[in-house]
Length: 255
Image (cartoon, rainbow, N blue to C red; front, side):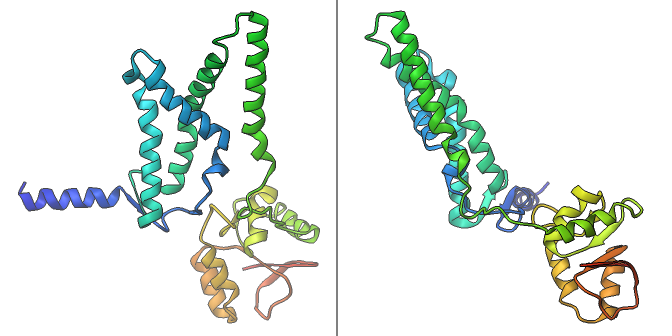
């Protein structure tokens, strides 16, 4: 293999290991405190420092410190350049959250040990330990009661839409259904039919947008056949020559 081929192979491998903006479904710049509590970060920092101060063989615990630091660097690179290497950005946020608890546990242990140094009574030590753990637990789970502003709870469908989707469960299984994004999100959970796409994580929402923005029945039918779609949901009747199988607040057509 020539040097040129080796260089080309290396470049190709690096490109395959590069995840740019747009690779993932949801690439929101989450606050770090949405995934892990502030008290958790404080304990993790104290734990990382404590490993080098209190452990006899700190090198033994070095991977627990290097892993979250490496992930944090990768997240920072993505936010600055729009590219993430080795693993996608959103996955790195998850990896960071699961790499920190062991350091937080070390931090909590060191704090309890330091706080108990000058206390001789066992009962007092136990009470102090319970008190510290209670405080840590409170601040750890306090954020669970708050929904981040960028992730509001959305109202997907009304009761009339539920009746429409529920009707789909009476149709032959494993059919593909075209519906607007919100109602499509509920199609599989309620009827076990397959939507074209949902609000997040499944399918391509642009196909839904393109279909409903196309006023021509012939072009719409071509789009439906391309995606092997059997049923279409509309909010009212449309001037297309399709069979109406459901007509109440919404209308379902068999294509």
